[in-house]
Length: 117
Image 1 (cartoon, rainbow, N blue to C red):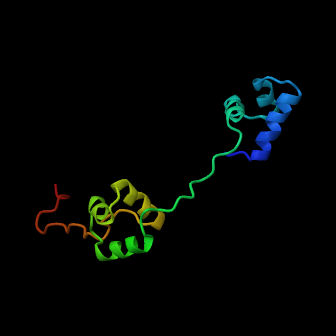
Image 2 (image 1 turned 90 degrees about the vertical axis):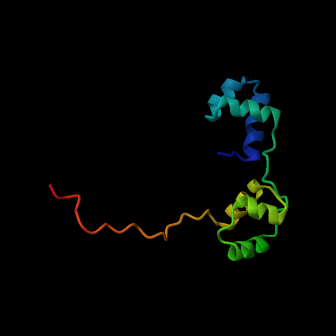
Image 3 (image 1 turned 180 degrees about the vertical axis):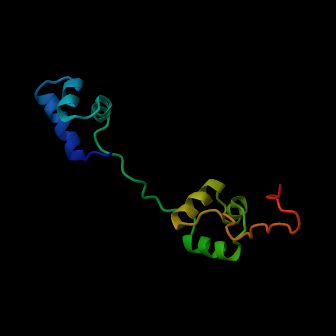
């Protein structure tokens, strides 16, 4: 669970003002000692990456429609990125790898039945 920056500041402020140990402040706020140690080092919560993707998502959708059976390495070569980049982009689009759920099940052979004794 991610605690808010305000809560983190409050915990560290109480620790400093009341001259408490890390263990005491952790017990008081019912949080892990490791959390207090980590917050002492880095107060601000790390945000999400707001970096633009290298791949055009619309172009990837069209590529999936044109080449539904393509492997990740083939798509990666077409877009000039890594296979991992393709996997992450497809995940963002909600597209999973093909599971071949439409393959017909084998029909039983005619003749001897395996149930006969």
